[in-house]
Amino acid sequence: MSVRRCLAWPDRRLRMRADPVREIDDGIRGIWNDMIDTMEAMPGVGLAAPQIGVMLRLAVVDASAERGRALRLANPEILHASIELRDHEEASPNLPGVSAAVSRPRAVTVRFVDRDGATVERDFVGLEATSIQHQIDHLNGRMYFDRLGRAKRDMLLRRARKLRG
Image 1 (spheres, one colour):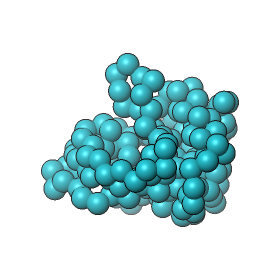
Image 2: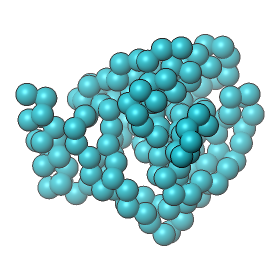
Image 3: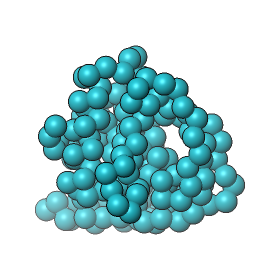
Image 4: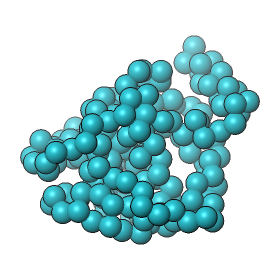
């Protein structure tokens, strides 16, 4: 297990759709473990494999107060989303130093393959739902700032470029 380096925006891999995971094996479990170590080192509440340059549909999420309860997801897909929205300040280690409030559905039902290779359908609410949606965006080649209006997005990217020097 180790902390991996996150890709720096605008690395082209952050705009690519990740490939489906065919089988849960020790290699996949090792990537998940590295992702959890990386997420904890940030610290953050989620991480998608493309953020560390692994182009597979893998994500980890831990929005628990006590930590150490990371959920491992392969091939996650949203089946249902609530019409009620929730605003949350989102950021990414791929574009450090900036963040923005993003509105997303407050609750989602997600189908995914778990650490044992079983297909699971589960409901998520609040921060956990927000983080899973954020990670699925990464798996689809989207960044959180893509959900902002053009003016806000341009301002955020200008600020990020300034911070990079």
